[in-house]
Each structure stands twice: as structure tokens, then as C-alpha cells.
Image (tube, rainbow, N blue to C red; front, side, top):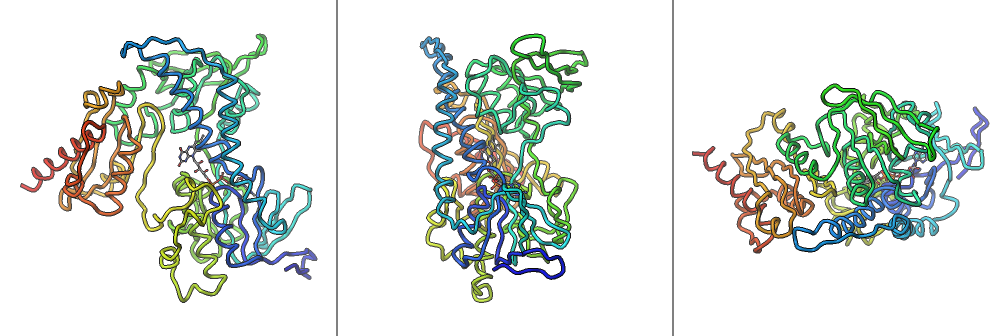
Length: 515
Ligand SMILES: Cc1cc2nc3c(=O)[nH]c(=O)nc-3n(C[C@H](O)[C@H](O)[C@H](O)COP(=O)(O)OP(=O)(O)OC[C@H]3O[C@@H](n4cnc5c(N)ncnc54)[C@H](O)[C@@H]3O)c2cc1C
């Protein structure tokens, strides 16, 4: 419905709901709301596929898959298998791009099926009046009044100030790395968070000379010091880790061809050092753009980390407003499954309100009645929302080798809350199956409440951490205690037997505590 506002003489489109951002969260919200009304808009700047499929989860795992093949082909001497695999960089990147394009095509197909009138191509901000101001690709401004607003604007790589200018095209980010036509000869990766670590190791395994910089002595954002130390030990054998360093300046040397990137830094011992090479990957974190949207005009306040205040953790609804902020945009847990669930839940809630059913049926009931959330998704099944709408169990996995995972509460959260806690652990250095496979480097620590025997959280670096994370997250979510987990069978010989050893260690410590 379009009306003319006599005060401002602007043509204003009035919609039941507006979704800003068409990534994983936005797609899921759109799907739900479009079941309740045709009078909705989705406004998106840039690609209409998702970060996950285009420049996130999927291309990074594709690169890692190639890297693992190369690594095992070249590093199996201890098994009596000697190899000298030739890595065809162009072909590596072509497979990454071809498969990436295939994954990206699924959300795009859905977008094509949406009503053209509901799609606006452009950047959105909020006007002082609270109206949505869509700056369209054609240079027009469209004003929209929405009864419900879902902000799903994601996040972008955050690059230190001045680096773009100083480094020019020798600077890359996760937005551009998967576009490279060939593998570079050398690369500095700045940042040892999930993205930096995964991409640095993948490039290194593919024969790129990689140096990884971080200002602190931390990898993967690990919050348990014992796990962090172990992770550093495991990675130091295979990666050029330059931790505890301070980057003083970056520049570009055009006197050589091709131009080289130069990093001047102070190393951990306080010595001045210089790194030179082909590319610098800035993996220095991701940032949402909420501070640029004019959210104060719709009653949303942000904290000093750019996170919205007074937000419902499940649906992203901001208290006393008609605004939801979901996915990476709210910066609480910038992970794919969270974006997917929040998009779905916010959309479901808005759909209930629009269809006038919100008083009869609450959100949990409505979700329980969805036969299968994944069938309800506009994106790939793997990236569809799940039924974990009430589960607030934190879980993250880094797909390095060895993998890193954390579930539930971190050790510092447990300590800050002054909760009673015992810690059981297992080393994977000599764990049977891990040794058989030649992946025997790692440590798992499980934090449990000695009174209830329930698991509070866990942190791990080691083989198969992705599966161990899921088992522990399932136990935390469903309140299965240590004895309950130990009552399940563990097949021999598996890496999961290591999990049982850690659980037995916890059980022993609980007995000691209780005696
Ligand atoms: C390299 C990499 C690897 C990753 N690996 C994993 C992983 O293994 N596991 C995992 O769980 N997560 C991973 N992630 C994170 C995951 O990809 C994100 O959490 C998820 O994609 C966020 O989805 P979203 O819907 O919130 O945002 P997005 O998919 O980014 O969508 C946001 C959309 O909003 C648009 N937009 C922004 N501002 C505006 C505006 N003002 N107006 C209109 N439109 C706007 C953007 O252009 C974009 O299209 C990874 C991320 C990266 C970068």
C-alpha cells in the first residue's frame, strides 16, 4: 500500500513487515512472514545469496578440504607412504569457486521465486522520522513504514584503519580470498581467530609460505589457558606462529614486480622485525554495521561493542519496539546456526502477530507444530533452522587440524559466576585411535557441577572435536549428567573413547568432592 505523507510530501510505502538484509537470517525470516502476508519487503545491499555460501562457511571448508588432501599426500612418511604431490593452485581455486557457486545458487533460486515487488535492491538506513530509507541501486530513495522490522544485516571483515590505503591490492580479507585465481606464493595472516586460523592453515597446507601474527598469545579465541597452551603446541609443529607481536606499520613495496606487502612488527622478545610477501590477509575480526543505520530513530540503543541492548536472546526482539535484530547483525553469537534460528524465530513470531494468532498460540507451540523446520527453509537443508529454539547451549567449532571446540559455559564464565566446578580431562597425545590415525595431539577439558553431576561446559583442541562438541552440547541441552553419558556404549577403537576417559575423570572428581 502506498500513501503520500502530507507533512513531508514523500511517497511512503506502508508494509506489514520489512526485512533488511538477505543473508541466512533474512531469508528465513522472509520465508516465515511471506506465509502470513504479501505486503512485505526485503531490502538488500550487495549479493542476494548468503555470506555462508559465498564467502564464509562453505568456501572456507572447500579450501580446507583441498588443503587436507595436499597435506596427507605430502606428509604420510611415518606410514611408509612417501609423496610429493604437485599442487595446481588454479585448479584448487577453481574447485573452491565452482562448488561455492553451486552452494550459492540455492538461496539465489529462492530469491528469484519471490515477488519482484517485495524485493528492493539497495542500502537501508533509518530516517529521523523512524521511516525506513532504502537507497536503491537506481539512485532513488524509497520511504517505507513497516509495522514490524527485522534487521539481518550481518557483519563484514573489520580491517585496521589505513591498511587498505597502505597495502592496496596486496591486502585481502575473507570477502576476497576466495576470488583469487591462483594460490599466492606467500601470505601473512593477521589474526588467529577462527577465520585466520582456518585460512592460514589451509593456505600453508597448500604450499603457500604463511606467517601468522597475533598480538596476544592466543589461538582460536580459546578461553581455557590449558587448552590454549596445548593448541599452540600442536600448531607450532606445522605453522609459523608469530604470537605476542605488535604490528607497527604496513606498507607496499612497488619497486619490485609484483608489488610486495611489507609488515614491520615487534616480536615477542621486543625486537624489530620485517615480513615481506605477496598478500596480507586481514583476519582481524568482523564488525556489524548497526552503528551506521540510525537505529536511535527506532528506539534501539547499542552497547560499546555495537550490540543492541534489551534484546530477547531467542527472537532478537528489542524490548518495547517493533524491531528485531538477528544473525551476525546483533553480534552476540555470529555463527551460522544461530543466524538461521534467529531469522526463523523472528519471522515466525512476526507471522503469528500479522495473522492475528499471537494471542491464541505462543511461539514455542507454533514451532512445535512445524512438522519439520528444515522443509520450511528457503535455503539448503544443512543451513536450515533446527528445533533448538529453546536451546541456548553455546557451541563453536574451528575446522583447523587439530580442531578446536567449545560448548556451554567457558571456564571464565563459570569462575565469574562463582559456580562450584570440577574439571575432568584427557590428553589425545597417546589416545589409542588418535595415535593409529597419526592425529594424536590434543586435550579435552570438561567442566561439571559436582553437586548435580551436570556438564557446565567444555573446551578442546584435538581430533574429531566437532563430534565431541555435539555430544556434549546434546548432554548439556537435555540435562544428561555424567553417569547418564557414561551409561551409553562407546565403540572400540574410536577417538570418542577419549571422551569417555575424560568423563570418567570428571566422575572420579565428583566422587572426591562429594566424599
Ligand atoms: C570465512 C568465514 C567462515 C565462516 N565459517 C563458519 C563456520 O564454519 N560455522 C559457522 O557457524 N559460521 C561460520 N561463519 C559465520 C557465518 O557465515 C555467519 O554467522 C552467517 O553467514 C551470518 O548470516 P547473516 O544472515 O547474519 O548475515 P549475512 O549472510 O552476511 O547477510 C547479511 C546481508 O545484509 C546485507 N546488508 C548489510 N547492511 C545492509 C543495509 N544497510 N541495507 C541493506 N542490506 C544490508 C548484506 O549485504 C548481506 O547480504 C563464517 C564466516 C566467514 C566469513
